[in-house]
Image (cartoon, rainbow over all chains, first blue to last red; front, side, top):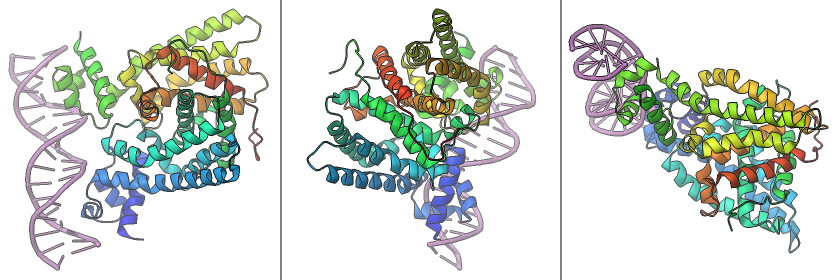
Length: 212
Length: 212
DNA sequence: GTCTATAACCTGATAGAC
DNA sequence: GTCTATCAGGTTATAGAC
């Protein structure tokens, strides 16, 4: 394995375990068994290393999501788009990757939504936003009659459900006294999809000063 | 205002803006206009300060939740417990407090679920768990027929939806191009309740190797 | 209770030999 | 590409004067 990969692996492990700020480059290079200066040689800065660690996991998730969505749209042709298919394209890749190989990394991903970081914001705008936009359009096709803004609210709720499930899986274990198993990928996907399907299809609540 | 309160206010503001790890005691005391040593006098350590900041906001949320749940249960008597009432007791206090006065603090709360911290875990077990247990029992009464484990899964999803909505409200703005307004407390509560009601009442998905 | 001063240590980054 | 050595600046925590 190359020095670069050793650094990425070690960084991912330690970022997940201790948090980004709390993890020093020294800890990373010690864990990786490489020299301190190597991290500044291969990456320019700690910030760039953080982005590289994230991109390595997020890239495959979004690629797979778009591939599944493509397949779903191809199959539907000009007919109605099945919500089940759109939902599965959205949920399955992230649960599989962050529930499997990248499991230890999931808590870190959860924090990224809320951690104030401008390089992360830049990353989201370039990598996340185009994917989000495609899915919003697909969901609109699958849920005609639901106003776009209400859809966006509900997708926001849904992303919270997915993210929290993956990022705070230890909380589910505590809450259930170990009865619920978040490492069961198929069970997690099925349960998320059942919950989200119902939530997305809920009758629109009457809200004073509703947004148009 | 006392020095202690000035420190708590400044810490809350800076923790929320920059993150806990990234905020130094020096930054806090500068913001508060007090001396550096005061923080070690009034609190013993940075970690204890963090817990104090959190407890100040979380306490009132849980008190209000339990008060509303008490009222709901009293009103129901021996009859069936309305899901709407339980849900409202659970959702409204947290949205009102973290969407109002403690708005800037909300992102920090979101991170706490996933931030690895043993003092936080201790805090959750003493403050959060009893509240969670009471609500699980209430939800079970309001949703007879839903197996406890499935309920716990769905409550976990729901907490993700609530937490993400409050903690990552800037994401909702981005996603909706500013069309959805997360600072509208009543609208947020109503939409969360509509979504969660449907999600909690969804048909139970068939899952292979389902947990008993 | 509040200050100053400082101890003891860790941080990211880099220059320069190999 | 990889090392050592080091820079310049930051960190928490505390001792001791007022």
